[in-house]
Image (cartoon, rainbow, N blue to C red; front, side, top):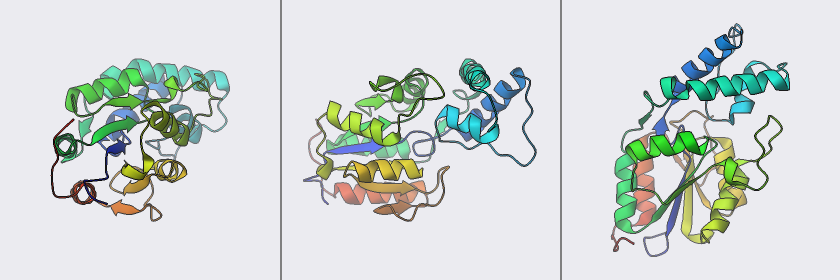
Length: 229
């Protein structure tokens, strides 16, 4: 691929553009305590999946009512735990700035609720992306533990909303669901293996560091900048 045919880029947020592990884990531990729960011995908190899935991975026998209570407590704790400590991974701001200069339109697809994702994006990436799409915008969304919106659904909604030519687009993410979403939408995939997911070996490209992500993306974009749009 070259700059002549790459027109759009899609990025996951947590674990790809921003390092939010500490804030998310501390916020969830606080939510657990507020709900009278202690972390089970030997359990770890996964970062990246939808909130309800994360809670159930730690407390698989939790009732729907308890999961909802934990999720609400976490949302209330977000501004104290996540937003203050979440930071961009090295070179990600520079990368999105380069894409803007190239005239490539950048979009964000994330499970993180829009009220939270917009705050962190505006803090560090203001003016560097077109839109952030979250599950709450999908027609199939319902704010319960039974919600079944997938990353594939989020990306498809984004592609349809902006009439993105998937032959001229790439997507970068750190989770299996990100790479699956790219492939199911016929989009070139980049695995951000420096993030929170497992090492992904079935993506079209793999980046073990943000430096490698930077080089892969700019190689896909090509070496000749075109006028920004």
